[in-house]
Picture 1 (tube, rainbow, N blue to C red):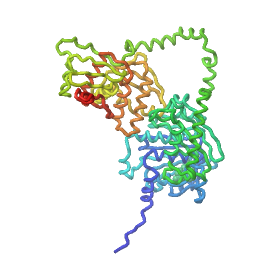
Picture 2 (cartoon, protein in one colour; picture 1 turned 30 degrees about the vertical axis):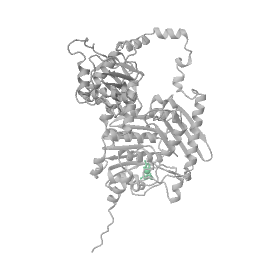
Picture 3 (cartoon, protein in one colour; picture 1 turned 90 degrees about the vertical axis):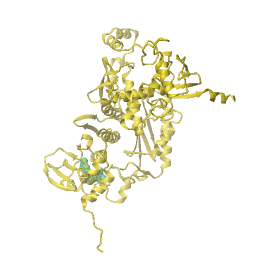
Picture 4 (cartoon, rainbow, N blue to C red; picture 1 turned 45 degrees about the vertical axis):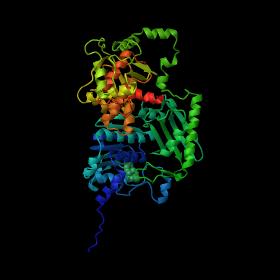
Length: 606
Ligand code: ADP
Ligand code: MG
């Protein structure tokens, strides 16, 4: 029999190898950004079209490449960053494997322009399927521009594996944030389909965190800084009371490289012990710097996992540093903010707020407009009762009185007879006691309301939109860039749910209207909570529609601890039993528990 083994052609070998490094557009983004950082750039611009599926381009003003290097950089194992295996343990650059550009050239159509400061002309190179199509001199600015088009154009199976644009863009933003966070001294921008979504001027780490995670971070950060001979830890952690339900804003960098480490995360969580509630997550952005000899960065193809020479020491340091920072913060709670100097110079900060100035402010026309603005579109709820309104109940004895609750109760619980007029009462401001002849129900008001809203919102998405009440004085909200992208993606579905919101510039939105039956005046907080819920649900990998329905339902539901009037209770119970599924919340918790008379008698030994 003939021999059967053949060497694979280079382009196929490269395509196979690319599978490890380039899984999706975001992986290419990471590699290209890191190369620009390694090239010493202080300005790095990223452009993507169709979430990177059509185009990913990175333009830097770093050191550039010679004509020969420009050709060589696309070869596999071609790198300027290490020469010997020993160098691996002294790595100070982001890259070192010499695989990224070779992989990219194997699975996309690439155009590069590059020039070193000492060269008069730059080099232009086109490559696809690992084959150079064109190379020649070109006039170009100092630095490097690499554009990769049609990722996986020649590997259709992988192209089909890509997720929706919204989801791939989310991954790109995550990678962009991780690189930009680690290098606040570098200017970064990110544009998606021609629209700039991040524009990050060079500055301090704290400024970069605020640029990336939103202004609301400003007052939440506690500085961490410990230096020892073995390692240094610096960065910021969130104040305990600002811990969120989502893991999102947690970043560990070792020698400026973003890493995932459940082990070190545990060290942080341990430092917060007893200061935050269960299932809440503090924000942190922590930089660990230590001698590269103490870490092995070559244990994972995308280098997001690393191995410490002595993991236990690092754990102990991290935990101690954060405990220390949190302890200091609780003694000197507010000394930590550096305000922007332009803000610090403002009269309102500099001058004391005297009685005289207070009354001047109150009578100013701006103040008047604002307070009127708030009142003009307010639905008067009368008192602190919940936010939905009730139609007049039919008078007792009138034809059809109490039909809804009775009929539906009896159809669902053949043996559960609800009297004509149910006198309900509320327990612990949380449960509604619904008595009847042979049994009673305890309905959990929040769980029940979540179920009702969930079904109503599902109907809204299926073509029966909820009425929107237009605001007379629409509020504008400003979000962190990543949240802005998330919200922009949700807008078309929020509209039938009664939220009419329009984009207004890069990260701002105007709330033109909200669902007619919820209270207005707090739109910003409402939207932030919806986004927070969405992030929580997308972490547990719920489908998008389900995630949105549950988020909005949870946000709008009447909370445990709210006092309900008779009519509210009646209405809630009626509505619950009109639901297709009335006995469980969307996430499967019970909405009510039934206690039958026989059970009680048993309990009393009768
Ligand atoms: P690695 O970064 O692991 O060395 P890459 O395949 O990412 O491997 O890049 C190969 C080489 O190309 C790098 O070592 C570097 O010399 C050069 N290079 C890549 N991108 C740039 C850039 N933006 N500016 C200058 N040189 C670059
Ligand atoms: Mg690289």
